[in-house]
Length: 283
Length: 293
Image (cartoon, rainbow over all chains, first blue to last red; front, side, top):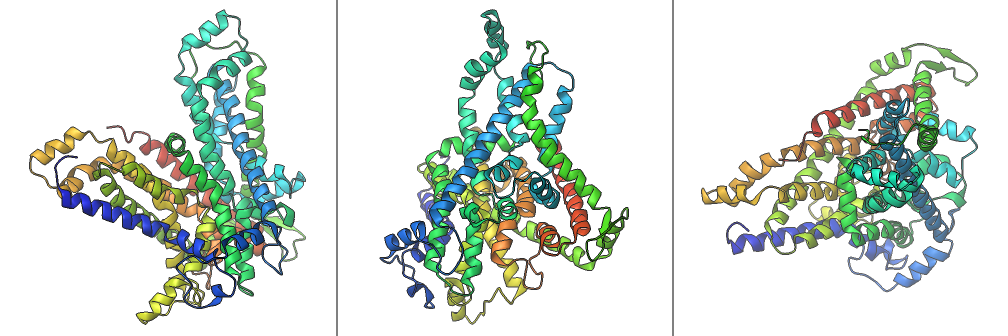
């Protein structure tokens, strides 16, 4: 602190607390809605304090049919789908980016820069701008309604490749020299030296990519028509649509809560890695 | 770029880049070129034959008043989202930078909305503003204001802006706080000795020194508002009422998958691609030389 201004310090804390409360308000309302029964959630001033139906709603949402009168898969199934998709996307992105960065940094081969630029271009082509044709490609390959279709088209990553390239460039050349003197093959060098040295970067990237994968919306919406392949994030929209006829806000909000707990938990519990990952990938 | 010491040429590097390159070619380059090809074709009303028309689809778009309005709406939407989320974040970061104790605890409490999916953010806000049940319409009724975003286009727009900005505050806060904490203490102390109060210091020292971050965040927020807010709009308003919240990305989706106008949708995709490419170029050319003082 530069100077001692107790009043300003108190005001700073107050403003920050108000900011936190305002930011948390939507989540609080969601949580409260998930703790009441259906009838209470239909009366005009909705409650602002939690009720006693949390476990009942929890069990009904997670293991029951969820929203009654719809063809939505049970929530545990959707959570499993989301987990599979998020894991496949994040691990897929990390592994293919690691090996391509390794090739680009440690090998001299024709078209090296050509490959590098090709990967760079993917940065400029987000799913949103090539929706129709990508959908057609996936349909032609017979990958609709499968985990492969959900994850593989999203796993090319320019940012991850750049990040690993950056990390490898900071590893001293002597590492490679001594490894070669000791007779290590390229893949041996990769597994025994590069991977252990970039462990924290991999972890940081994993945190970011897990959230990215879990929160995918447009892509799963396009390529899954089978109720069994629905992801939890997608299901919210279907439930909101169903809510226009018969609102069961307690179930909808419980589902929303279940959908956001895994990524929020990841951010809060691995905050340091998360911050590192954000700042490394975006700059 | 390349290591001074490297492995001899073999087939290995090709095998290593192969997965990434294959995915890129099949799911990025090929669809993108298909989009360009389709953008120059028009399908007849029954989908039986297509005709190559060069730039007619673009010409149709250029003359389409609705597309023009969508373009403008997207820009206004993005500007509002960026402005609201960045100013709230800057304001909070300014105070968090001041407090000695607990700055990191505050950070924890403020960054978690980053992890909430856009469509979930939309669901939370649409519930809070539900005209019959929501808490805010209920409160607004006391001051005599009638809220119904299903009917009122301006209210619908305001709602999606708020939901989109709410989610993005976390990200901006994180970057502003990091930028402020990396300003050398001696600079702040010197100005304090010269008699500058906290507000003056914030305006004349901190704000200019975080301006590279501001510029960087402006680009990131624009990209976010243009492309990542699809989920929010799809959940909250579906582009309505009467197209009042249809932004470019939503229109590509809607014209392609709902309206089945393949040529028109592809032409819009190509325009979006040009937009992303220019934003990426701006980001790399100007933002690269940034934040280190």
